[in-house]
Amino acid sequence: MHKIQVEAQKDFSYALNETGDYRESWRIFRIMAEFVEGYQFLSKLEREVTILGSARTKVENIFYDTARKLGKLLGENGFTTITGGGPGIMEAANRGAFEAGGKSVGLNIQLPFEQRINPYVKESAAFYYFFTRKVMLTSPANAFVYFPGGFGTMDEFFEVVDLMELGKMDRSPIVLVGKEYWNPLIDFLKNKSCSIGSVPQYDVDSWHVVDTAQEAFEFIKDTKDRTNSCELDPSNFHCKGSGVDWKIFRIMAELVEGFEFLTGLVEDVTVLGTKSAKLDSPYYDAAYQLGAQLADHKIVTVTGGGPGIMEAANKGAFENGGDSIGINMQFGAKERVNPYVKRSIGFQFPFNRKLILTAPSKAFVFFPGGFGTLHQLFEILTLIETKKMPKIPIILFDREFWEPMHVFIKKIFVHKFETISDEDDEMYQIVDTVDSAMGLIKDFRKQKNDTSSPDHSARGGSALG
Image (tube, rainbow, N blue to C red):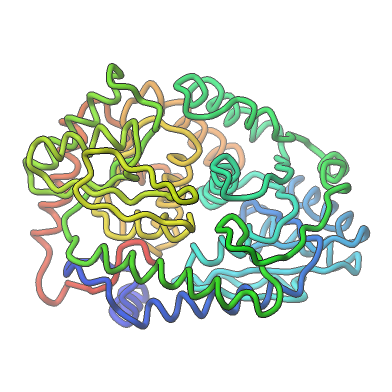
């Protein structure tokens, strides 16, 4: 039997949830153990800079050399270089810091296929869950540097800029290395996401796009190390000393409530997109029609619970007798919930909300949107690419909006920088009609039902890797 199938049977983490049971206590304790160990590990670090980029970058590549030089500059100037601990850009940055006698840290991910820790990491921690590892990669950093990468780099990039826009994370310098790589993405955001009101242009204009290690370092060198305090603030993920204890229990309580909320969900589709879509928008109308058709087919509609596309999909499900669910973000004492949600749950910690929003779904439909939509999209693609999640329909609605992103992925990711394979850009499909989206969902549902049997059912959530 294939190794991944063996792991799925043993660990319940790669299979679709066909029972609606999310109450496995082992999962909660494993997640919390990673938070405890991760926070303890990070509490020793100072002046951290996180460097992210492709694991496929070769030693002879110009970006490997640039990342190595940047790691050297950071090491020589008393910064801690944090990477994902693997090969490629991560190895290069760790190597530069290591060779300069600086602090070189790796936060590694355990994959169904092995990812080795590179030999230039002085201190490391390993994580099973992508979402806990990403919290640790981002929580202590005083600056972020992104090199050309694939789906994982995009996921990490959009998560950070999304959290900063939401006010759930302190603003820090964002440095993008490689103008040829990053400028097409910035053009897409300005021409598409900004134009529909989903992304503030001043956020995009605040990023620093450079080509050399010295240019990157100029935007980092004067950053001040943050005080590692432990206020009751979900935007502050990083603590020193015993203060971490209360935070761990608060995170755990949210996760327990979230998994309890999901229990019973089996057939559901998550619909995501811009919160800026108005009632007279064709996107609003399409999302409404999608929610209505999901209701007709007895499929639960799951959204982020807010306005815009989320409201439209919830409204379509609600007004046509379907189950309409919102998994919301809380901002202080306020919870943003549209009036068409039948059941909702709110989260203070964005990484908890993201996990619960992702876990149960049998398909995702992405309408045009901004940082949050793109963050969710690239996270799902990363989970599927790394075999942490089974392949399910990933549907992008509106070719006019998404085609430039598809061209960017095909031209820049696949052919120019080779950060993903030819097959990886086939994990999603672009449609222009609600009927086409529903056709893909129904085909997958039929295929899944045709191949299911008691021996094939598994208890794990679809995105809990």
